[in-house]
Length: 284
Image (cartoon, rainbow, N blue to C red):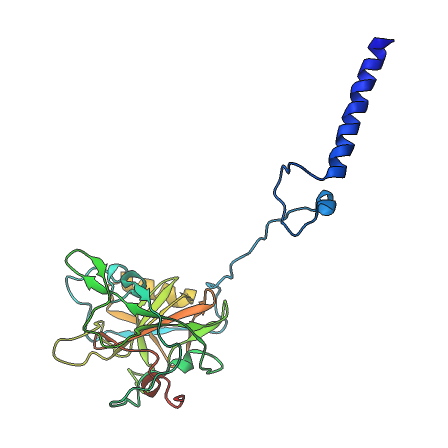
């Protein structure tokens, strides 16, 4: 009889221990639960990880088509290919965050009435929120590496982060320049992360003794697939011709909530917040 009662006694004691543990609360949790969940609710809580799918910024833009024109002055001999050239890839050059005013700035001096206008990058022609300010690096050409932002550039901001929506279509900044057949700019570099536009038909960023015109960089976008394919095809063929764009022509989609903008005039970075130059009519 004792041998029959012993297993029953063990079971009974185990049940009493479990009951006591539930009454006193959970002493050891095998799986972490959020602090906001009470012990009474823990038996019913199921943790499901949040799954976030990134937007397909490389999705084609319906109805677009692109053409190309001949380059007047070719790529500078001896320079690395565009994807490894910091004059062509702003992301390769890099830039540092700086704590500067996030709004339009009014500078003195002359104004180019034909200069590219950044509000024309957006289908609603808005002045977007300025969400971040940066300064572009210098470059050590001998060792092929970035340097701190150059001290000879007087502008406190040379790259501007503006607020956008994921997958928002970004347009070519419109200008008063016509490089032929109504086109404003030539695409001198394009990738899944950025584009560089030259507002002449020269495949150069600067000249020592004459103006080379504007170069605009837009980062945080995926260049429209057919435009990117055309650029890659013409680049592989020797860059004798390159894609061209009209003002306000779609060129890509934003990856996330910020797009970077920078502009150079004959190689020198300017301040993209300058309202008299690149947000004309928007000055406070």
